[in-house]
Figure 1: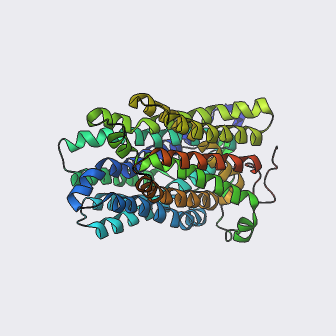
Figure 2: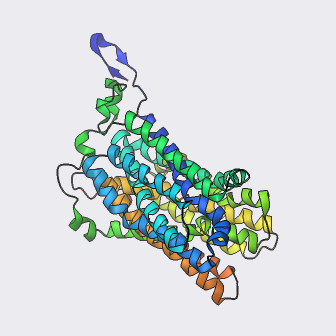
Figure 3: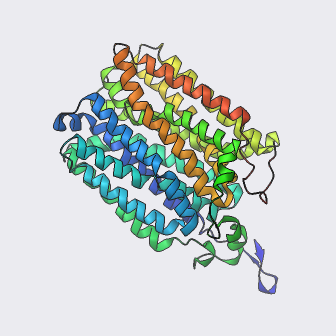
Amino acid sequence: MTTGEGGSREIPTRVRYGVVFFAVTLAIITYVDRICITKTAGDIQRDLGLTRGQMSWVFTIFAWTYGLFEIPWGWLGDRSGARKVLMRVVVCWSFFTAATGWTWNLASLLVTRALFGMGEAGAFPNLTKTFTTWLPAHERVRAQGILWLAARWGGAFTPFLVILILNFFSWRRTFEIFGALGIVWAYFFYRWYRDDPRTHPGVNDAERALIPKASETSASHGPAPWGRLMASRQIWLLCAQYFFLAFGAFFYMSWFPTYIKDVRGVTGTLGALLDGTPFFFMGIGSLTTGFLLARFARWMGSTARARRGMAATGFLCSGLFLLLSTRIQEPHLAILVIGFAGFSNDLAMPPSWGASMDIGGRYAGTVSASMNTLGCLGSGLFPIVADKVVAWSGEDWNMVFYISAASYFLGMICWFFLDPVTPIEPEGKEATA
């Protein structure tokens, strides 16, 4: 509360939480749009005459164009504000989500998914920018936890939603339906959002006192400090750990439904429900970290140590649970253990994105985009590596799990040396290590 005229104490409005609502709904849409193809992959392969190897390139081309445009979209959000950038990218990828249903061969599918990835690349860096602009520092990591809960649960329930829609429509019409969701979101977001929160008509003086100053979050006054970014060991460690995290996690976004059906023998409606198991647990992991990290920081006396401990634990347990799943014969129990690996995976998500906000400061969009670019490189490599390894090993999917576990262990090592709180700007706050 702040003191107004006549000594009255003003209660802050909560308009700033509207940005969390829009971020959550968009996170759900992003994962609905990208996970839809994993459940329709069989129909697409059959109708377009594609092999598993060709389909792996369809998964990969999305991840690589997504990664290629992360930094440009993040930089543009820092320069011109998230309002226009998010509206444009959401309309772009929503169109190409629908256009996926209009493809007729491998080439057209690759081009469409590449353009879809180009559009989606702008989502999370600019959502991170909105959090940096609208939320005080102590609320940002919790907001990231809620954001990733929504994203993961969007992925968790998409397979079941796709199965329901496929009972009435073809896979082609299904993509059109999902594409329409983003257009609706873009319209309402553009009407509500302000790049300067203080100009929003619903924000009162007490809430303005909580919101970061424009000078702390606006980067429109000059170019991004690329030399400082490229020379920063912390930036490289931040990007490297996210590469290893994304490589391990992309199994759930590409071949997991195929694994459940072909290896574990679970099909039909039950298979659709179980397809979302890792994402369901991932969401719980993100939410858990988002709400517990501040408490751990107070208990440990250090935000840096709390983030390191939480993220390293997540990496370690992700790898161990994947290894454990290879020793379990009962399919439902094995899938549950893989779900625990997903839970552990997302213990590292809020610390990673919280670190990108703190390290980036007014360049949070650029730094988070750089981190996500390396993550997309890892994501894009996974489907190809998995396809080759499975073929080389005589359809032994355990080999894929061993490689993913090794990736998680390497990510854990990165966190031992990462300072996740000190900003690249010299005038920023100091780390508590």
